[in-house]
Length: 219
Picture 1 (cartoon, rainbow, N blue to C red):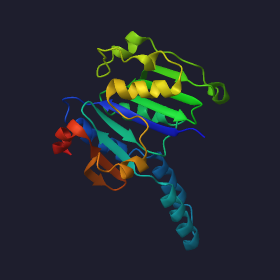
Picture 2 (picture 1 turned 90 degrees about the vertical axis):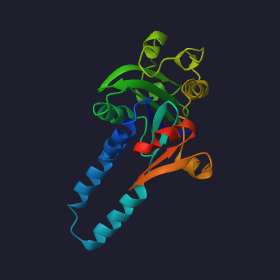
Picture 3 (picture 1 turned 45 degrees about the horizontal axis):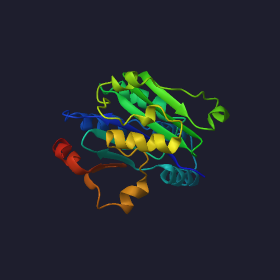
Picture 4 (picture 1 turned 180 degrees about the vertical axis):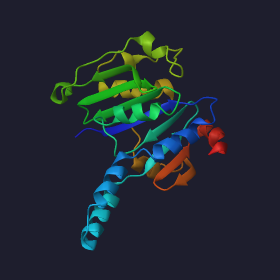
């Protein structure tokens, strides 16, 4: 079994209002909550309601936001490679910035792309399992990706745009932009000394690391 995750990342340099926008929009963007409430209204028996509420509570996950020097990253373990693109498209219509999405499924499929205002600016699909999910291998022109505001690179850290090796691609994205695309809930607990909790509201937690703490004042 390989790794499974989906995350998205928003360049937020010198834009102090972005963090609050993300919090406002992401907290209320849980389609599962809408579905579960609709289903709950159809139940009549108190016992049925109790059982259903326990099931929903077990399914729900905490959403994590991580503020770094250049990016605000969002992690939610209910996201997957099947849902990440449409989720990011919806959020991008409310936040006037490009959003990088990434997702890995069992090291068989890795997808990434940049979305802005509901439109896909570029995307990559790689991995040996693409055909199993009716996906085609897609490449990104280097100049297209690097022309997007917030995703410019001046050095040679562009391997993620050319390699077909999933591990190398993921590592290259992390190195190029100073983000961690595959963080899990357990990472925030196991390495709590690395992250500082700057806000918590319902099932959403906001952490900061390094220079990201500079933007915590508006949270």
